Every structure is written in structure tokens, then in C-alpha cells.
Image (cartoon, rainbow, N blue to C red; front, side, top):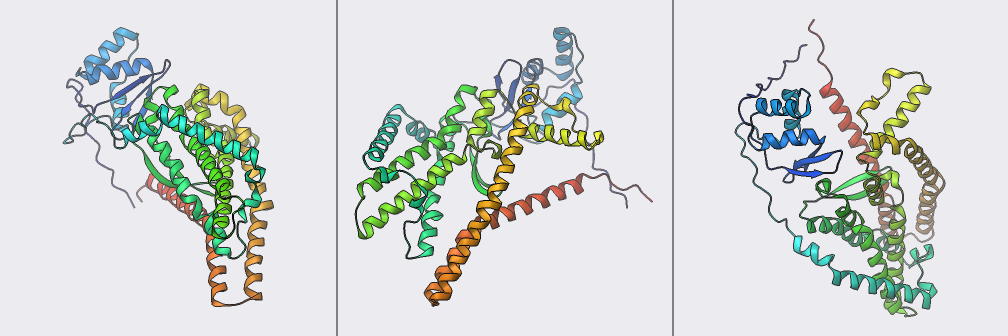
Length: 415
């Protein structure tokens, strides 16, 4: 069966000016980031390519701009291919499409500036200092795993404190990233994704590539800042209720439980290979663009060399020099990290899951009642919903890639 070819777009008239959307430029020496802030579409151009694009944006026809480029740099430019790249990045206005209007102030920009104002930093510092002083005065407030078991009366209450009790702090973490970006006038979006067998919330700040590197650090670290402040606030709240009995004592223990889990999320950020906040901070400091993808391809090429399959190797000429340089050692760190998490999965996660299931069944068999049955069932659902969601997201991603491969596969020749 033959597949009809899609209609080809008509070649651009090289003697007519192009219609370009409003563009932003960030010159970083060897590369210039150019893109559209309204849809967060950006590309890396060499300085001479950015200069050529500026002339096109200024209204110069492509043929005349190409002649200028040859005169200026002593090289020919394939203008049709250059225009194709602009179209792929959606920098060109299509036929019948209106040119985008320059973006104005984004929502919540004032709030972002207030949250990270000098006065706010003073408040954050006082909270952290107060929490440190409280822990020194009362060592029992120190985050420790025993704090997780803040109640023994109900398995559901225990899981609600651990799982659902983290939802507001996770949202505050991501909101901090978004507000730090909005403070700079950048758009942001929140999504649910998977990191190995973890389910995570992720704030997209693609527009960060359009601001100088020194201004990217706060949006990347804003979530960690909030985590430290939240831990301090929960510790101070628990300190106020320390040694209390009844409901007040239970609330104090719940606060310590939530503080410990937040501390564990802070530690999780050091798993660079899961593309955490600290990973993005590191690649910004190191001057990399897509270190993770390059490291995967470096490792793939190593495996293909061992298997003597050079035809399956990735073309190394497509890698940025800085990414390749760092990926040589980072790829081994990435493999070690995934190996460590796999070890944790089989030595801690699986045994822990079996243990809590045994606890639930033990409680049910020794005192079967409708209340206990509901308690145990809800506990098991809350305990296992994250790995189930992670598995679902993995299967969905695999199916999506499979559909993409089939859609881009060449059509079978006609019989």
C-alpha cells in the first residue's frame, strides 16, 4: 500500500522580506540564544547566524541578507535551509497568521518580586536561625526517621500525614520556582512527570535560556529555599507544642513528621542524574546545554563499541563541545546513580512494601471489623499509588514513543 506524500510548502520568495515574530536575543559569546518569549521557543545560533537573523528581522530580503553575509564573513549561506530552521522554531509567521504582539508583564510578577524582596529574605533568615536555635535547645526536634511514626492508632492517619501532608509543601516548592521566574517576566507551567520510579511535579521555565546565566540561579534554587524555610517553620511550630499532650501533642508530632519528609526531599535534590533542581544549577554553572542527553549518548556509543556495532552509534559531531567534555565523566556518575537507586529499590523499597503489607494484613486478621478493613485498604492504596502512577507514566511514554516511530517510518514501496 502506498502512502500519499504530504503537500510540500512553496519555497519562500528570497526577494521579499520575511514576516518574523518579535524575537529576543541573548549573546553569550560563542552562542546567541534567539527565540520567542510568547511561546517559549528558542534556538542556539552562532554569532554570525544571529547577525544574519537580525538583518532579516529588520526587513532585509533574504537574497540581499545572504549577499551581505558573504561580503561580511567570506562564506556562502544556504538561505533556504536557514529559513527552514526559522520555520521549525516557529520564528516565522505562517501565511495568514498574525505576527505576535510583544509580550507584556506576566501575571504574578509583583508577587514574585515581593516573595524574593530584601525584606522577605530577612524574614526567611530569622525563621532558619530560630529553627536552628530551637534544635540546639531541644535536640528531640532534630529531623529523624522516628518522627515519621507520629501515631500508632491508625494506618490511614499515618499515611495521610506522610503523603497528603506533603502536598501543600510540594506545591509551595514548585510555586517558588514559578514566582522566581515570573519575577523576571517569564512564563511558567506545572506538570506531573516521572523520574525513574519517582512521580514528581515539575515547573517548566523554558524562558530561562533567554536571561543571563547569573539571573537563572534564583529560579533554579527557589524551591530549595522554600523547602528550608518550610522545614524551619514546621520545626518552630513543633517546638511550640513540644511536650504537649492530647491533640496538641499529636499536631506537634505531625509537624515533625512533615519536616523530616521535607528534609528527605532536599536530600533527593542531590540525585543529579534524575534532572533535579541542582542538576540544572550544575549545568548552568558548567556552561552545558543538554548534559543528560549527551551523557546517555556517550554511554550508548561506549556500549556499541564493545559490541562492535559502529552503525548503531550516535554521530558525535552533533554534540556541543562543552557537553561532550563534561559528559565523559558525568556519564559514569549517571550510571552509578541509577545502579544505586536500583539497589535501593530491591534492598529497601520492595522489602519495605512487603513489610507494611504484612503489618496491614496482621492488623486485619487480628481484629477484623469494617473500620479496620477500611483503614487497611485505604492505607495500602496510599502506600502504593506512587509506584503505580510511575508505572503508568512509563507505559504511556513508551507507547507514545512507539507511535512516533511508526508514524515517522518510511512508507512501504508500492507492489
